Amino acid sequence: MIFMAKEWLKSAKTDLLTIEKIINEADLSHIVAFHSQQAVEKSFKALLENRKIDFKKQHDLIKLKNKIDNFDVNQDTLDTLNKLYIDSRYPGELGLLPHGKPTTADAKDFFDFACEIYDKVNAILKEED
Image (tube, rainbow, N blue to C red; front, side):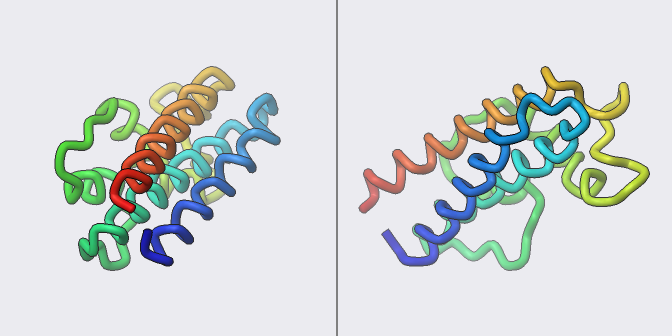
């Protein structure tokens, strides 16, 4: 595995470990959403890096995922996390969904999704090694 691919994957794992510590804190659900988005983004970048596919400075999950051949995901969850990325970083918006700040259930769904993507990328990288 290419060094930078390992580093992206390690960083994604750090986001997941952070989420594990705050997942049950309702007032931090927007932070869970942010770290979930980050874990997915970094997982995608690990795979792209390993395959030597240029992704420049990119945070758009849809664009990153579209650079990866044959990688199926729950598109609705990916779209939602993609929209939350910017909003979750700035006060006032706090990662708002159409019904407001993510619920604890929303946060758990995002975390599960991020774990699924991480695990899938990790398995692919082991196969490609």
